[in-house]
Amino acid sequence: MIRVVVAGAYGRMGREVLKAVYKTEDMILVGAVDVRGEGQDVGPLWGGPEMGITLEGDLEKVLAEARPDVMVDFTTPDAVAGNIKTALKSGVRPVVGTTGMSSGELEEIRNLAESLKLGCVIAPNFAIGAVLMMRFAAEAARYLPHVEIIELHHDQKLDAPSGTAIKTAELVAAARGDFQQGLPTEIEKIPGVRGGSYEGGIRIHSVRLPGLVAHQEVIFGGLGQTLSIRHDSISRESFMPGVLLAVRRVMHLEGVVYGLENLLFE
Ligand code: NAD
Image (cartoon, rainbow, N blue to C red; front, side, top):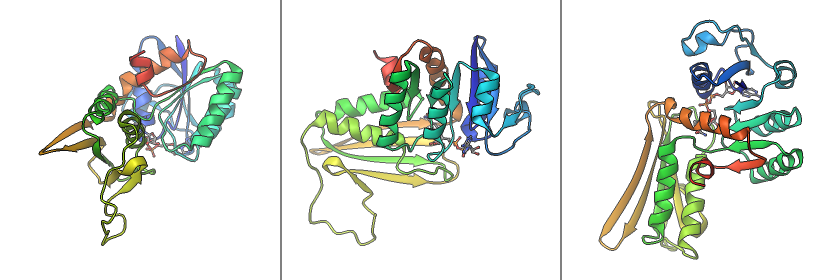
């Protein structure tokens, strides 16, 4: 049995993780942390039976008392790095889906996990379809180097662009090599209308609307043709097989693995 604590358990993703862990035979929920909903039993949060685990606000205390193997974190960009460091220092392996961490924070966490010889998985997207979309986009960029990325999410998402969009842009830039796209003389009549500009002029556009979950389209333009590669997470269940895979695999890792693709396609 893998003992799991969920950080951000009151949130949309946290609730989905509670449900997934409950339904998984080789895992047991031993604690749940959130700054909201303290004192509530977590079962009803995902429409399940009472589980005898209540939401608590102090991560360090929960980790000390519940002695989990793994902490799954779906919190906020300002909380995540602190939570990961608390978990590692408590001897607990983090599996992290929260996006928006800075490269400095990531570097610090890499060093800490390595020095403590503890596994840690950080993935901006746990949906296998999204990982495949990024892989196919990198392949296409070798032949069609003009690319724009449109990512679409629900309107409660804090960070923009999405971690997946940034990761896609990184992969595309690496695959196509030294390349600059776009018209240097173009004029934006409304500031920002052409989206954010990543390395080599790759434009990233972020759409935020109620009704959306997590979606991304990568559009390639070539001579007389376009190619669109699109992924849609229709429900948050789409992320759970990836999260459960990471929980199992992190038990046998040392140091940080960044990106689900590194667990899927080694
Ligand atoms: P949400 O706002 O519904 O949930 C976040 C929860 O974290 C809230 O309940 C909030 O109270 C809690 N929280 C804030 N600070 C905390 C702290 N210090 N300790 C404990 N809990 C704290 O957000 P969401 O839609 O569930 O998304 C959470 C994160 O997951 C976001 O960064 C989002 O971009 C990311 N996400 C990642 C994936 C992926 O596959 N990697 C998929 C979907 C969402």
